[in-house]
Length: 366
Image (tube, rainbow, N blue to C red; front, top):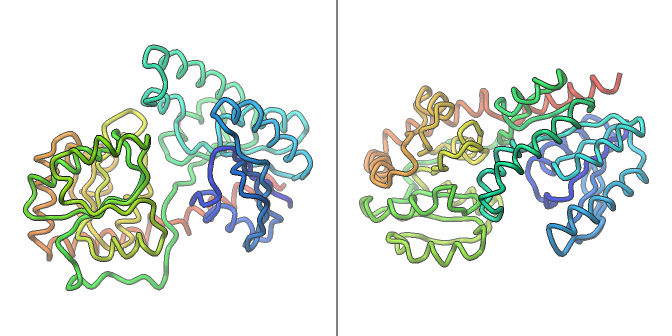
């Protein structure tokens, strides 16, 4: 069975697509390729091929011209199943379905809800654009063979229009050689690894350092927009930050290895409240406790299993108190880290999600 994934947005190191789904399908014996649009050229990777249609110079060009290139390349490859990852490719999915192909839409985000928090969209048209996007997305997805969602919340939305929906959660890949960290090697540090945006609570996180007791933070990620850094470095508490920029997997593991807690203090916007951020589970998989936003879903995972502390993400004093509780009580922090590590090993891991993905493909192959 020949399988072709399509993305005009995601880069070729996107974890979900390139390090989880594509290798899983290749290991199952399928003929796998992916069409991208990043301008880095074609590439052979173990188990699958990357075909590049070239990058775009603007968002408008990407939506108009690049999507056409993706469609032409998709037709040229003549796969049995097409699996696309971006809402701007919905029209491509519709066209492929009309060509008699089997088509899967992988909804990484709840796009209509996400639009409501996009800083670059004029706030006066966000609601209209969100509603229009949802109507169009629903109209296309009714006719597709399968919809994969990144969370159970998004799954419930699509089940109202198509019975063939399953959540493939973005949980971490198990490293069977990874062991619990040696707590004697820990430093008086916490960490945040991920996208650096205002709605991810970076400002509040840094402000909380000025209230915590002599704790430093390892900060890794890319600022969006880049100008956000100019604001952040003026924040009280910045002198307690060690900044890394984008880091690879090895460096991320080293950062978590010396930290006493990982933070995921996203703002309570509609697109985050029911999300399952992979970074939260990566902290747990590294054997460190999590300080996370007090969303009901997250509290059910973190507090019920005693693997971290949930806080009001907009309350810097509450964040600082949680930081102090863990850094000043290493035995408590170590126990929480052990609980989270065990939970990832048993439940929140890619190996379980991988089986669900393969079952979908086996169903479509019939």
